[in-house]
Amino acid sequence: MTQELSPNIQDYLKRIYEITSSGGKASTSQLAETLGISAASVTNMLQKLSKTQPPYVTYQKHQGVKLTEAGRLAALKILRRHRLIEHYLVQKLGYTWDEVHQEAEILEHAMSPLLESRIDAALGYPTVDPHGDPIPDADLAISGVDHIALSRLAVGKHGTITRVPHEDPQVLRYLGKCGLHPGAQIQLLARTPYDQTMRVLILESGEEVVIGPSLGGQIDISET
Amino acid sequence: MTQELSPNIQDYLKRIYEITSSGGKASTSQLAETLGISAASVTNMLQKLSKTQPPYVTYQKHQGVKLTEAGRLAALKILRRHRLIEHYLVQKLGYTWDEVHQEAEILEHAMSPLLESRIDAALGYPTVDPHGDPIPDADLAISGVDHIALSRLAVGKHGTITRVPHEDPQVLRYLGKCGLHPGAQIQLLARTPYDQTMRVLILESGEEVVIGPSLGGQIDISET
DNA sequence: GGTTAAAATTAGTCTAACCTAAATTAGCTT
DNA sequence: AAGCTAATTTAGGTTAGACTAATTTTAACC
Image 1 (spheres, each protein chain N blue to C red):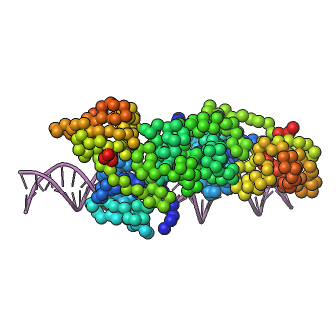
Image 2 (cartoon, each protein chain N blue to C red):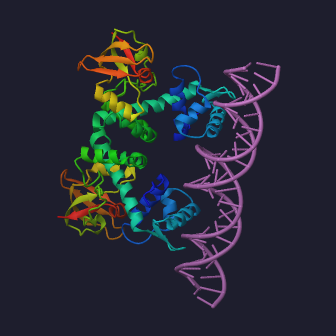
Image 3 (tube, rainbow over the protein chains, first blue to last red):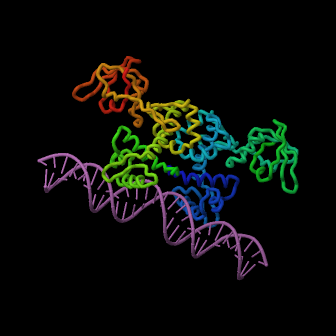
């Protein structure tokens, strides 16, 4: 049961977790696309992961996959490592938040339980990573904060950024330049009816930023 | 030419470097033994490494291998990462010197050039790792300190420990308990003629330790 | 200089991932 | 309800790196 999973498999499980965390199933083509491999390869792996003892996913032909409890725990374990590393690189080694995802993507697979706990302690047992994503604790419990997508915030309302997308360095550099990091106070000034583009006021700097709907859907807010 | 070498190949090159650093060639069986794989697998790999463009080793049937310049540089690159990691884990994350080798063995393959330089800077550009092994600099230049094996020190002479073996945690815990770390001042009190066992005085603590010849051959001293 | 033991090599398999090309299925549109 | 298209699966092949078993080479000894 607790035989070490290959880095490869861990990546699959992590990706399935990310895709399904907002509900539903992960499709073969979604996985193929985001993992950068062919759909045929994904099918193979999903079949394999559904036939292990215990199975890590529930799979039915043409229906996509969901994680089993074993799969969810394996995904959380690697996600914890990923996010701890991101936090550590920013806090202790002077990385910027757009540099850490790629680095963590590799380091997460090279991290022993001891290193994990040392880094956790060195950071003071953090609960979120630099992008605002929650870090599962040592028992893999993960906090489900309730936030709302910026794109769903009502016009005129105030809020605090809680989470931003974490993968795309370009997006992160842009957000960073605007001051749109977790903790930043904002007010939604307007939303264009036609294309849903938003005008956002950043309270700290008093500056105004324009955010499109697709990016707005990936930024989370807690209303204040 | 500068296509990334696989972790596997890096391990081979590193091992060949370690075996041949005191001169001579690395034999198939030495490599098989220390890498923990079969001799047949090693032969395969050596043939492959001697046929790359550029070749990483010079290989002739039944004659063992030596690194080419390309192979030496690749080995030093990974050795630099290995030793930087060891130093970092001890200095910044509270590891003991017997814990770091295994950890570095894995992390070295997950280390980007950026991480390497950040860790190097965070440590103040160290020149030796916790076991006294020299760390190649960013240009892969490595300092050739001249030391002598403890087992070759003349009886009665004083010296400073410069290097200890780095792989075996048990040996390291023992040496640590004795106070036999790089920098420690010692005097060789006696060497038994029959079995070459040595009595060593540790000046700092005033304690006396007995060291066998095989361990003594792996501890380096600079005479004082 | 021949015998033999140890070391090294060859030959042939195996597994984990990936791939492409071909076949099948699901689900939408008429 | 038939047909079409996109998604998915199957079939078959590749590569890296390991293995075992069988063979060959080296070197050492009498």
